[in-house]
Image (cartoon, rainbow, N blue to C red; front, side):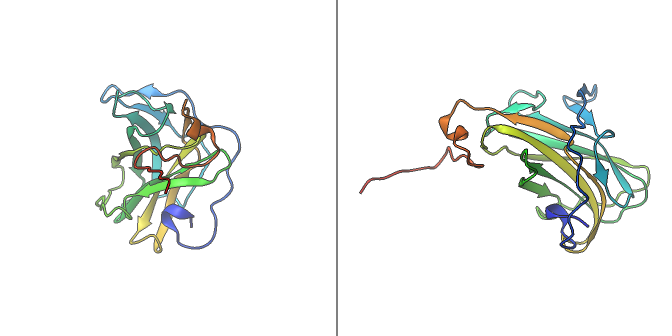
Amino acid sequence: MSQGLFTKSNKLPPSKKEDNCVENAAESEASNKFWQGVEQCESFGEGGAEIKRVALTSMKDSLPGIEFEGGERVVFSVEIEAKRDIDKPIVGFHLSDPKGINILGLNSYTYGFALGSLRKGEVRGVEFEFDFPYLKAAEYSFSPAVAEGISVDDNVQLHWVYDAYMIQIVSGDESARLGHYLVLKDNVDIRVN
């Protein structure tokens, strides 16, 4: 049972701890990703799959994403391990502000990407590539999740990890300091008639 990513009911996930679970990132020799393990993070789920680690990489310079202005092309990676056979996995994440308000979320089901079944013991990485939005200056957290099911209304939450990856939005742009969540920078016209 979860909120947002995989809504099966109106029940909210168990409340999270206020402390930060994120440890130092470790660079993977097999890629340019700076993975962060999530074993110290608060989580919940019925089991069946486990989120092992996450990474956020800027496509601009292939460096780990810790500080952004917004507008950058990024890849958020989630590595999961199947603890049993999973026929219809759904993987996604929420991005939340310091108050725990979900600002955005992506998942494989709602974007029409079938991950294919997972077999017990299989480890698979799922990457979400997108343009990071312009947001007000603050600290934000990524909370990844993996579920099994056929839709956002019919699924079982297997593993949800709170605050697995923290980033800081910084900007010298005055519009980013006005207090609004979203900052519009492109395609804005103002006219006087």
